[in-house]
Length: 264
Image 1 (tube, rainbow, N blue to C red):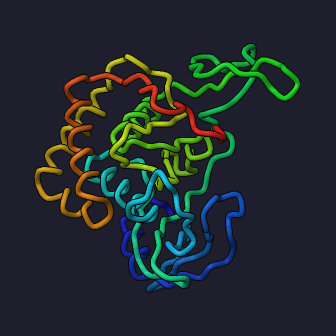
Image 2: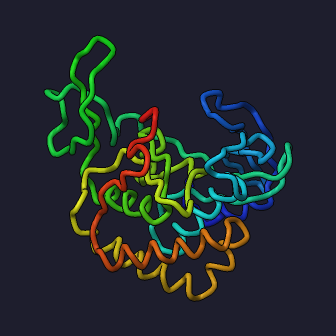
C-alpha cells in the first residue's frame, strides 16, 4: 500500500495490528507487522511505549509522542517528510504506529566512501579514517527533497538524523523515520545532512515555515501539547521565528556532537 494513500491514516487509527517480527538493531522495542481493516492491509511499524528505554537527556513525555508530534508538524507545514504516524493502543499497549516504507535500494542518498569515489554533485560532510586507516568521507546527495528534509530537521531539532533514517521510497518519494529524539528545548541538532551550511533556505522550505507558523497560531500548539511539553512547544515557535528571520541553514551549535553516532 502506498504510504501516501489517503486511506492510510484511517487504517492506522482503527486497523487490527498483527505483529510478525522485531527490528533487532533498534535500541528501543520496534515491532514489525501488518495492520488491516475493511479489506485494506498495509505493513506497519509499532513501537510500544513500554518498550522505550529511559533517556536522561529526554526525560519528558515519550519517544512515541515525539514521533507523532514530528508527523503533525510535517503535515501542518507541508514538508511531507514523515510517513503517516499515529498514537494508539496495540497488542503491547499504547505506542506509535507508522506505515512501513518500502525502499528503493538502488537509490542512495547518504554514503561513506573513498574521497576518490564521491559521486558527481554530492557534498562532503565529514572526513574520517576506516578500520585500516584508509581515508573516507561522509557524503550526501544534493537534491531539493533532501534540502527540505534538512530544513525540517532544523525545525524539529532532530538529534538523530542518521543515514539509515533517510529512506528513498519505491514510490519515488523521500521519507524520514525514527523521530523519537526531537523537539528538545536545547539545541540538539545532530544530522548527516550538513551540506548546505550558510546557504539560503529554499523557497519551498520558507513557504513551509510560514505555513507552520500560521498553524501554530491557529491551534496546532494545542494539538502538539498532547505529545510534548508547553516549554517544548514555545521553543518550537521560537525556532521557527528564528529560522524565518535568518533565512539560511545554520552551523552546528557546538553543543555536543554535530553528527549522530553511528552515522548509519
